Amino acid sequence: GGRVQLLSTKTKPKNLVFEAPDGPSHTFLLKGRDDLRLDGRIMQLLQVVNGLVASDTTASGMRGAPAPMGPSPHLRCRDYDVVPIAPRAGLIRWVSAVPLFLIHRQRRLCQVMKQQQQQSDRAEDKKRLLESSTDMWQ
Image (cartoon, rainbow, N blue to C red; front, top):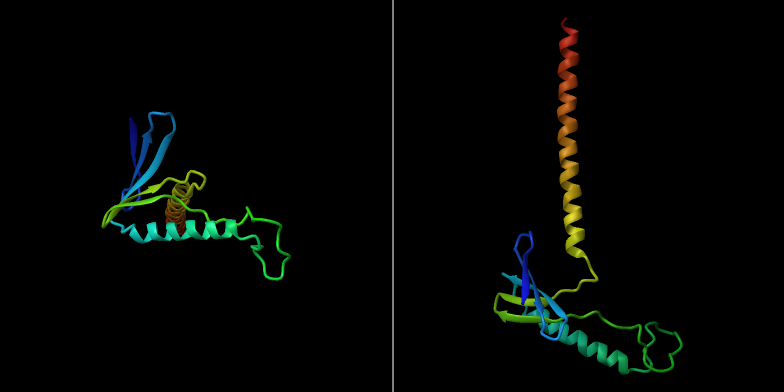
């Protein structure tokens, strides 16, 4: 079983939720019109970097800082699964800890509300100007 949600952005990506038979669900973003092969390679590179940093006992994150004792668990690049399924389409693991779409939607809503307020203010200014000029001629 699973669910599909169409997101209201320019490229209309789909949010897919796959429910595994053993219980957990897996959420992906199905993107079209984008070549995700480079994204997949970058994620593989980040996984290699994470492995190197985790195994490096001298990784401190700062030049001149004393070397920590053992691996440094706080140094890690955030990576996620990218699965290219065609030259211009692919799946990206949904990262729920970052509400970027919600932030984008709220920002867009604020922009629309601001534009509507500005239009309303201009209409109100025109009305007052018209009323004051009408009063002047009476």
